Image (cartoon, rainbow, N blue to C red; front, top):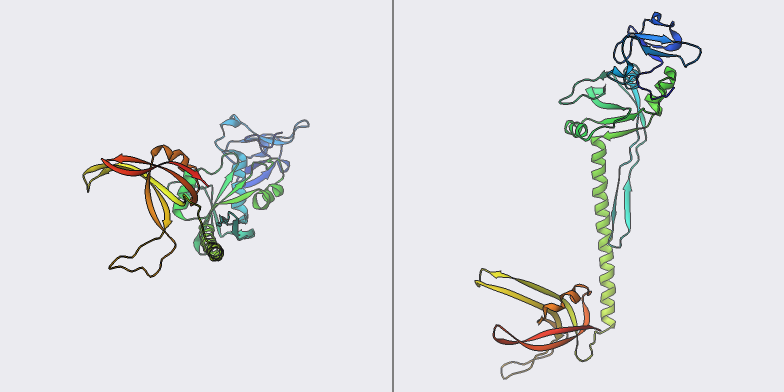
Length: 339
């Protein structure tokens, strides 16, 4: 018999007592009812098929809730305990070098004992399968999952309440097993996980903050190391350019309308460096100078595809032509050669 066959079970209710098929008389003399829908059961204990209960006056498919689902809730109500799943909050983040770092904590599973277990107790605008109450009236919700997992809608409602919820996945349990085996499965062995737990979210947030701080320190150390290396290199290597070469820092191209000047604008400029020079005059004396200063130079828009693929800064040779812009002669770059 398929262990997931709906509403076929080795268990029935005699008054309020859960009975196994092997512990009752055959036929209607078992005096048992369906644990799920309450319909009268027939104990089928023949020599061919595996012993089981069957519905007497209705099609089993009409039973409103799977027997396995209801049986697992009955076990929790009777046992008033469960092995909580371990939880493993973890976060990760990469540093400037692209190396991924992790921070995690592991909390082992532990058995929880309850003062009270309520089945299908309405809570705000949803109904959890099980509400388990323990010390100081604290609660956790337990969902018994046979086929459909906890919906996003229910999860959001649980989060708003701030009550922990775990899910126990019982679809692999054999409903024809004896009660001890099923109890062991529900209480300890069936897969389970925390669907939501506010403490886990708090720990996750703390770990993320700690990791962000650690990565920021690591990134700062890397930046300082690069700056130091570049500084040492600059001290020992003077940047020199051949004739007609210059350092290209970047570019900018834009157009639009200036409200301040009440006119349209359209410009494309390169940012380059040139040797810093100045000369003396009758009223001005230069003690000393050196190095480079930045200046802008216009360029032809046709160079935009080439510029978009370049890495800056870089040493280049510029091809220049004279053009007229707004009636004035200007210098325009019409070619760029990377050196």
